[in-house]
Length: 537
Image (cartoon, rainbow, N blue to C red):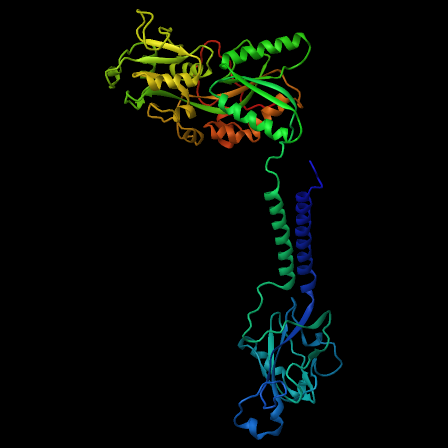
């Protein structure tokens, strides 16, 4: 992993900035606002005379025309407030004079003043008396030692003459353990800012960092090699039902790991679950004799391995759902498990017996190496199928056989034969059957074959099984077999498994089903038992 990559630097910078900003705000909240503070702001500074030195003429009536000094008069609204977190008492003012604060209007002369305050602070009025120091002289306005609770304020409407609008106005004085400071000037028509300048700056910096990080992530190569890529050659054998998943995952793994510069070759050679397990066992025994450790072979099996193969180590990969399919000429859509068992015992030779059309029953099955067949026998029939009686699935080679039954090598052959042969019934992996033409799925005991319903615990559909990946013993952690199995069961392979209609074991729903063994099983002689939870290489 490149720790100094651009996205890592931005991510770390964003995290540090967020922590620093949070710490700064905590410090600010705990330290700065605890001081006693008096803030002041000039909310209005307007001319009311006819002097046009500022480029603003006024229309005047009455007193403004009669008093000579009004020709250059101005009105100032000065707001004084306690914007700290503590109350201010009259003895908190530190000046030696009788009054507490002094307002200085540069280049102007105070002609009069009026005190205003909100109704809830009307008690402050009693402090504005000459005896308390309230008064003015020249350009100076003396303000008494007014006690202010947190958030209290009062306003002074001051009539001035001489000078220009906008001449500096300063409030002087001292507060014990505090300060007197100017605030942002806001006129009565202004809307106060929603956030302070510091808050806006921090928000802007964090936003820029996050957007930069997102841009890097989106723009970067989406086909980075997966963590733990390994080189070498790997053979995957076993289940033909799961083979489409394995081919796609193998291709993705080769492409992604090739980007990292490793030479990877994965061959998928599926001949059925039983044949795959035998091939793995033989390769393992040969490797043991040559003292080469675990061979680069992985076998996929629809269901657990048979007994007698203790060297094979299981890895639960997915829950596979299978389906019974019938030719479209057989218009039945639901069969009971008992009826299916009667069909496959050869007790029903014509679909009329089950309310269907007048067509002979053709049982299209898989060969003995098929995991799909073994799951069907284990979970639906509770026994093996009857003997094979036909080579071409059309004519009965054994005249003593109760029904026509044939065996084919792959899922694709079964689906093609059932679609072409009126009266045919077979079984297949669900996703392949769903996309086939000329046939339709059968419900069992009114339960629909549905991965979603099974995952959500809403269906007792029996024709399902865990897909196992077997290795001969424990392959090395840095081997291609180990890396590929991790990629398949817990990496990007999970998306492929889901796309092909299977439920990955390492999802929440899949984990529950895989740990429970995918449901109650009708055991057959020679079938091994599964452990209680998914295992991985």
